[in-house]
Length: 466
Image (cartoon, rainbow, N blue to C red):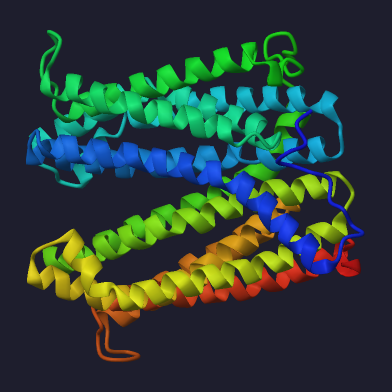
């Protein structure tokens, strides 16, 4: 087996050398994850830009459709994310005979989730009617989702198989096939949206078909690779197929559903905030969206490191080296804090330049600059919390962190943000800045609670002998 990306720790090394060695392992695991995340984000950018050149209605429909399918997909993708620490733990404990049975149970969950997600997407017209969209935009949105739904099985299949590849430490595999999907998405969008190669111009609906086709190509290519690659000869999908096992499926869901729900809660909250800000006018909404886009791009790096941290800690616990797992958990907070400081400083220094990069409208620029100052503080708290919750997932602790995030976002961030934005109860109404302060307050709360739980968890798991 490949020992390069998931080496057994050398516990007799000096503390600093052990720490740097673990950070290097994180970088090797996290680098390809980062590229895969950026490639997946690029698909959304490509869809938005190309639909926008078709018509304003097509652009609006693709944007609305994406905001509807994305939270649902994140719920199921997060649930399937339980496979990564499970398989990484088996890999660390050298329990290779348990890896393919777990993978197959994940594939059965992905199949069931595909049916549910398709049923949701092809029946959203009542939701569109509630939003009071113009009939043309609503028709395009439903058409886009109808086309997109055909690709859902491929997306969730890749999410399940990512548990196998990432769990084994081979994070470059999903990176490669994510890039493949992006490479196909661009020309397919051109063909379907604008009507090339004898096809009719489909506008925004073509985005759905392009995404379905590109994801289908990537999924089939991944299956071929896994069944023919020498690296996976030991883990042959078809030869090692097992029947559904309800107890194993329940074990995956117990770990994965809190992860999926946590991600869903965060994604849905940002959607709700966007709706709350709509009455403040398009200038405020545009400035808010720019600030949100900036922090989302910066968040890709700590998120990728967090995913690598989950893989590494679950491996270390499977390898029965809790002291090294604790060392990595605690030292990663130092790394996260340094990263957050760099990002926050960059946002403070380059706010004007970033605003001008996104828009030439002086009014939107002014709103963006004011919000990016708050976004810098938000970024610090966000980086710390994702590091803590990722480490806890490596310890297979997901239920209490889910409750912490639920309280921090919906119990603290949203109410506080609403009060600061629209009322004079605490201070004079602050507009959109109020929600950013509320978000930062909630994330600080989450960081403190998750950090305390992580510290206690590392001690309970035997990490007090670092």
